[in-house]
Length: 165
Image (cartoon, rainbow, N blue to C red; front, side):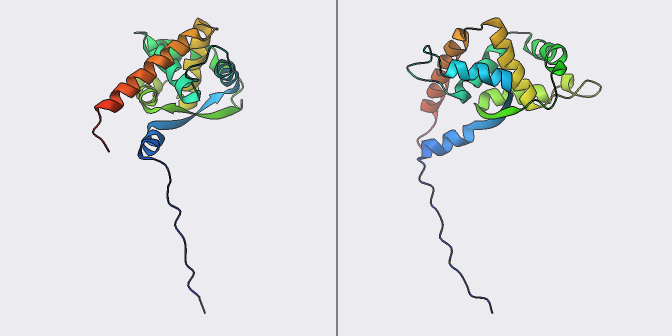
């Protein structure tokens, strides 16, 4: 004989803005070398008021790379000459990025440059390439922090245009 059991539902105590933010952040992975560089930037004394976290820093790297007209060529050049030489089983760290930057990488992932007969690169490799290119261009990370501020202002401005929810 079966006896019915009652289940209790847990209610989400997140505010509507937290729920919106959760949908606006996409999970990705970073190769360790680039993760370690971003982590040092996260902990840097220059990362203050506000202190940017990984979604901001990764998003800033993607935005910076895509600010160049030859962004796809730069990314695939790095992947084909640098990342491809690393051990494929290199550990990666799970992190997040903002949706607008994810959409840039998703379009690149779906582009003809990433289709047969070319090698197929995954999101973590594309994300890692953007971080690596930023590190190569400005090892101090100052440009990444400036771009994180611009991205935050743009997100905040976009949020004011949305109807109240």
